Structure formats: structure tokens, C-alpha cells
Image 1 (spheres, rainbow, N blue to C red):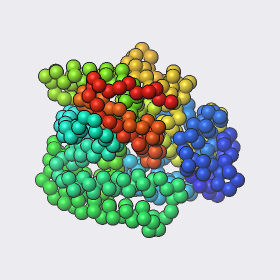
Image 2 (tube, rainbow, N blue to C red):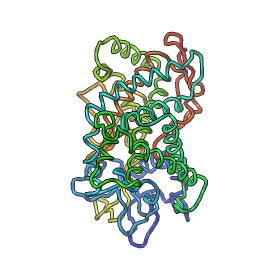
Image 3 (cartoon, rainbow, N blue to C red):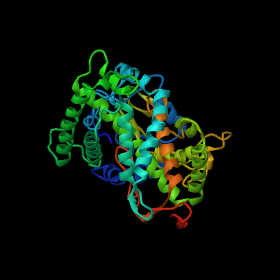
Image 4 (cartoon, rainbow, N blue to C red):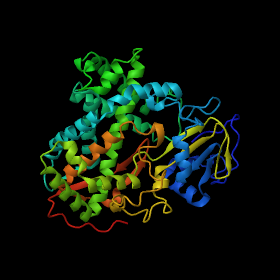
Length: 452
């Protein structure tokens, strides 16, 4: 949340008042999902959640902001506004750039995320899933987050950078991702030069990553567009990328691709474990697809119900749960003027669960995505974002997640060890915590009790 500054006009929009000194900072930091939900339900479609922060919740306004064909919003910091939110991260990456700089970087990477990568992803994730699932013994208890995370990280690094990463290299990347996510749990943003234990961990991981990338840059795969499309695009860029630019692009692409897919699969598995009929339908659909003598990507396209399960899981537990932009000029929503320099936020968690836009909004209903005659309102569903800045790898991530869900449920039924221990952890992504499952045969899993 933005801090107050003298250069940004104070808002005159209704919203929660918070505490006398900290305002809404404490409530947001301690439980952002509940805070944003209550703010939206109590104050309407345009809510002041801070002295210079506004939450938009109506699909019409969300689409208008994210698509933004008039250039009224910026992901980069507006001159004169607080640097706190922008001071951490990977500033040279496409995802953290804006304007012409962002377009140049997007154009450089876009051709890599082609149909060919999607086709490759389908086969790679199938092979990696078999490797992981063959190690699951019936009756064993598995930490689903840990296993899926390892699997998806191997898949993402191979898709983006070919086979130039060793197992030890993947471990270094995993440690960096964990350190960044851990830092994101810190409610107070300190200057980067303050050597807190979390910052020290990130610095150490970044040094190790620099060594990995320096070695990868000399790999023959850096010149192979087919086997390592993203690595080739980065290494053949003109002008040549600096080590900082290469590292920032790599780190953000891996974190976005790995974390989104991982969280989506774990949340979907959590929901299927509570809904055995839906899990059985996914399993039967996977059986039918497996019998087809066709490439993995073609079999994946027949997994219509499994795709609906994934979409419903990402409605209820979107890995990207909040998105913000800064106003470059005064804008107006629902009759409220929002001055230049204000941070405008939209939340997938809030809007995806709004009963005005989804019937039985808090229930897991995959069937809602099978009725093409009743699509959701535009702007009401945006797990991968909307507009020109929508996720560059959405099709690849969807392919990975659908096939992995199919492979898990084709082999096993998953029984939650302790449903009450599962909770969302809203950091950079909405991470599932406490999803431990007992591995059962498909035909022997007992029906779980109804979730609260």
C-alpha cells in the first residue's frame, strides 16, 4: 500500500478509516484477503483503502483499467509518488518495465511463447509427472506443495532454457524463489541496503544465480531457438543484455511461470480432494485421453472438464490475487475522481468471489465453465490479467496445469490429511499452505466430510 506524500492529492472517496496512526496498514498487512473483501462489500465498487490507494471491484472498471488503451496508468513509479512499492524486486525485467521499454522487451520475448512451446510443454510435463508420481507409494502422506513445486520448476526451466540447467542449478533457483516469497511476507518495506536475514538470503541466491547464468550463456543451447527459445531470445538481443538485465528477466519469468502453475495445481487438487465426484470425472476423462494415439497436446485439448476444474480453482484461488497501477493523470470511476499519482488496485480474490457476477460464488462448481451460452461478465474473471499486459505464458501454464491434474487423478485419489490446516498465504502469489495428502487407490478413497 502506498504511503502518504505531499505531492499526491488526498482522496475524497469512502472507505475503511482504520487506526488512528497506521490507518489501514495494520489490517491490510495482517489479513489482506479479509480486509479487501470487507472493504469492497461495505463501501462499494470504488473504495479508498489508504490515503492514496483505491480499490476497484466492478468488472467494467477493472477491464477499463487493465486494458487501458489511452495510457492513463503505469506499472512503473509515477514521479513524485512513494518509491516503497517499487524499491524491491527486479527492475530490469519486462514485467516491471513500462512504456516503450516494456514494448521492446515484450516484443523480444513474445515469439518464444509459441504453439511450439505449448506442444513441448504438454510432453515435458507428462514425462516429469510420471517421474514424480512413480515415487508415490499407496498410503503414503505427501506434501503436495513441495512435490508439485519441484516438478513445475523442472518443467519451467527446461521449457525456457532447454536442458542447460542441472539439478543443482534448479535447486539454486528454488532457493531464490523461496527467499523472494519469504521477503514478501514482511509488512514493512526497508531500504534494500539494510542487511536483514531475508535480504542476505536473497543476495546469496542472486550471486549463485549469476554464476549459473554466466555458465548457461556459453552453452550451445543459447544459440538453439527450438530447444531453448527464451534463452536464445535473451542471448541474441540487440543491444546485448547486461548481466543484471539477463538475471532480472530470468528470475521474473521463472517465478511467474513456476509459481502460478504450482499454486493453481495444488489449489485444484485441494478442491478435488473435497469433491470426489469431480475427481472421478477428471480421472475418467484422463483415461479416455490416454487411450488416444495422439500427441500430448492434442490429448490435452480433449480434457474439457479438467480445464473447467482448473478455471474454477483459479476463480476461487487465483495465484495472482492483486494487481496495481499508478495513475498518470486524473481518472474517474463511478462518479469518483481519482487524482494523478494514486495507486489503483484490483483484486482477483475479491471480484472472482463477488456473488453479483458468479452464482454460488463461494462454491466449487466447475460446470459453470462448460456452458458456453452463459460466459462470465467481461472483466469479472482475470487470473492471467487482461489487456496488453496479460500473462505472456498463459497458454503454456494452462497446458502444464491441465495435464498435471489429469496425470495425478488418473493414477490416484488424494485424501486431505487435515483440511482445517489448509490456508492461503497471500504473498506475491496466493500460495496454498498445509496441503498434505494421503495417496489412495482411485477406487478405495473414502468420501471426505463436507468442507466448511
